[in-house]
Figure 1 (cartoon, rainbow, N blue to C red):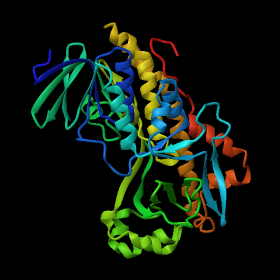
Figure 2 (figure 1 turned 30 degrees about the vertical axis):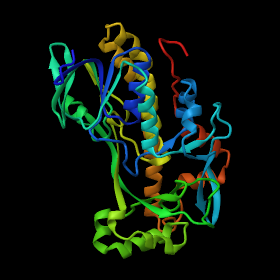
Figure 3 (figure 1 turned 120 degrees about the horizontal axis):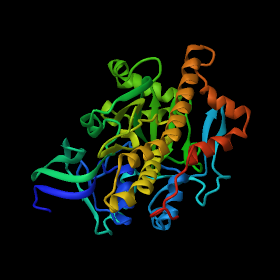
Figure 4 (figure 1 turned 90 degrees about the vertical axis):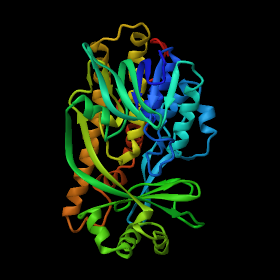
Amino acid sequence: MDDGRELTTTCVIAGAGPAGLMLGYLLARAGVSVTVVEKHGDFLRDFRGDTIHPSTLEVMEELGLADAFLALPHTRAPKLTAQMGGRTITMADFSRLPVKHRFIAFMPQWDFLNFLAAEAARYPHFRLITKAKVSSLIEGAQGVCGLVVETDEGIIEIRSTLVVGADGRNSIVREKAGLSVESFGNPSEVVWMKLSKQAGDPNEAMGHAGPRQGFVLIDRGDYWQCGYVVRGTTFADIREKGIAAFRAMVADVSPLPRARAEEIATFDDTSLLTVRIDRLTQWWRPGLICIGDAAHAMSPIGGVGVNLAVQDAVAAANILSRPLREGRLADADLAAVEKRRLFPTKATQKLQLMMRSSRRTDQADAAKRKGPPAFIRGIARWPVLAHLAGRLMGLGFRMEHARIDGKR
């Protein structure tokens, strides 16, 4: 019953990111009453994961949404490149993938989320509440049975059969649920910024240049989104040295002309991402499950976080939609989602940790410190590995397929 202060739904999802909105769309499509709550008023935030991989594009194709989705402004990368010894090498090649769309689409995440939200709104079972901050869980005799959110209009209690935490790596839901988190490796830092795109810039046709001595260059059409990987120090220490010193550090590793770094006027033109890799020891408890970054925070290496989140959502919808609709959700169903997604999560994180380890080994070797990471040198030596990297990056270790009630 909806009285303005208490809502009732079958599933409430915290977080309108890729995982939350994809799951909300799929559940609504399957006839499940679903409410998604988002603490922000819109999706307009810079420097979020903006890579849509072939695995996600295949899901959109299966749902009949790909044509409309790809009509939105985006750039395409059929391969990813990196700079090594003054030459460009192919780091990941998607040309042989067994899917229709063999490229990464670079699209602002807000466009992706607005698209999903609009498609989900076509279903009467879907509701999106913005400016709604999760404050607590509602507990019942059988487990979690809803969320309490704070809105501009006051407190709303949302009672539900299932609560889904899809609220990112700093998840309030997993914190309130008391779920245990295991961290791997040491946190690292990436500083994001925008630089103008001009005629004569390198790799214009490719749309993406991979890590070059700790620098990432992503084509956003009329500008470059740049990521500076902090090595051997911290961003706090860099800030103490001043903006001029930081510009010089960027210019030293950027493939763009040195003068372009002057566009970084102040540190306000940068955004710091603290990268950590972690995973819940158990993703669920009765009445609640976490997916996406809330269940497993990833490194931005390969831009796989968004796509793993989407794959989690597809798997969750495939497994949970029928028991939710029929009112027979059991703990075994939640455990089945975790079991389905645990291997690809562990395998991806293990690969990312290995890549980070090779980078640190290089940093300890003065002869290699100024060169690219070891995994890039390996791909340069054996180009066939670019196709393997393309498959792992583009499709992941287990690709999910969208289906309703067990049918493709």
